[in-house]
Image 1 (cartoon, rainbow, N blue to C red):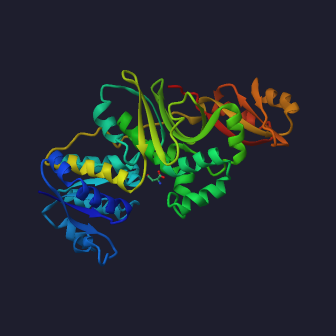
Image 2: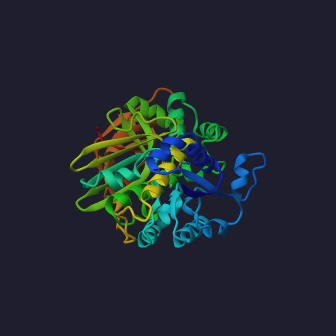
Length: 406
Ligand code: HSE
């Protein structure tokens, strides 16, 4: 019997308890022994719920319990999660977490602490919810040099963008609906401004290249300035708009960005809709691989956490190596990245000459019912040149284009 403790009985924590109960027998076979939740740390009490008999309010009750061999941190946020995780590792317990903020900020340090003690620090659920992506990067794609990772890594924004695309609704109305359905938080900033997706691509890129990508250094834009008009232009051009978090390696430099992109039907992530996530990886030997599924939600996220618990139990006393050093990975200059851009500009299509004198040849696009402005698509150009040209016109908005094809 392996005894574990869960820190936080919220959505994911209760999901972990439920999955361990629902699939008790098959999990026992896979882990080699039964896994029992001995304690659950939460500030609250749950009168009438069978979990109440396991609830503790003091972390010391878990840290000082020699029977507990794995601690599951599903509280979220940096503190007190970071302190609790460090104390658990110091006390000789392996840790599994779904906390992407913690992993993006302190991943290498916690991995090193686990390694020095022949323990494990696992975080499959921190990126892509239930989709296996951390383990494939660590353990399956080890023969490859990874040259590109592109993901739709945030379910809330994918839901909003999919709804806006299908129903022509406004960003504000769709966000409100996503909040009512419980997808978006009351304070939706981390999702809609791209910070959540940025941390996730920072984690994946760090794992792909073995050193630390500082998420603060990734150029990040969210979806809060996308309007129904953008989708009308996108439709006319055969595009959809997706929040992509992407990194690639070119000439020994790694570039990363999180931003809304227009993609067409040949793009691997074109059909990743609603709250689903998709991650596309290109390796120099394997070519393209795709991971697709539920990127959030109680049971999918709990599925990934429980898989980590099983791995920790199976590898008791043995560290499963993860190559991610604290050494900083210097990102290439985001202004050097070359791509096409879709642009909306004030004026009439007859003003195209002014646009072309700034951008060179462009492909104009107009939409019936949208007046006093028009759109155009540039040729591929570096971000730096685009920004200089954009200063010469009365630009309303621009969306990058990702021309990746399957
Ligand atoms: N807020 C996140 C999302 C949850 O919408 O994808 C999973 O990390």
